Length: 168
Image 1 (cartoon, rainbow, N blue to C red):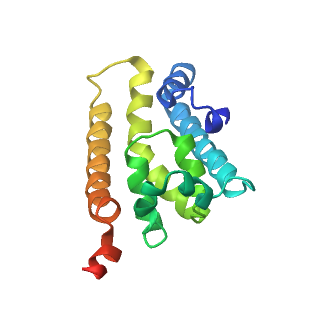
Image 2 (cartoon, one colour):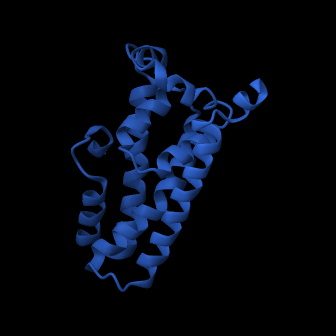
């Protein structure tokens, strides 16, 4: 749970430790619940922050505002795409809380984007065996998730999506 607000603890290290301590099935359950709790904690920090608001953050970093103009139009896919890049979950959680992304949308899209990497890291941590076919299946799925995130981001975040197309 503390991983939700501790940038210095690598996500992969937590997953691997769980796989070392528990049998595979239990490690997957523990890691899934732990990941959901982690991303939820940081989300709620952003969501219920009284001092920190999205507008205050954007006032300091105005050049980034254009990337969030379409966030409310595509909250599920926007959240999925951003999480697909495997940036620090704590920062992303606070950001989506500040954006007032609906919690269940945030949780579902984040977990969907994080699940493949969570699985291959947990499988790897079980016995550090790169010949495990499930490890490679989840690596391949994670690469597809990243590709989807890149394509979506290029079309709808970086290039402004339908709002900029309407201006043309």
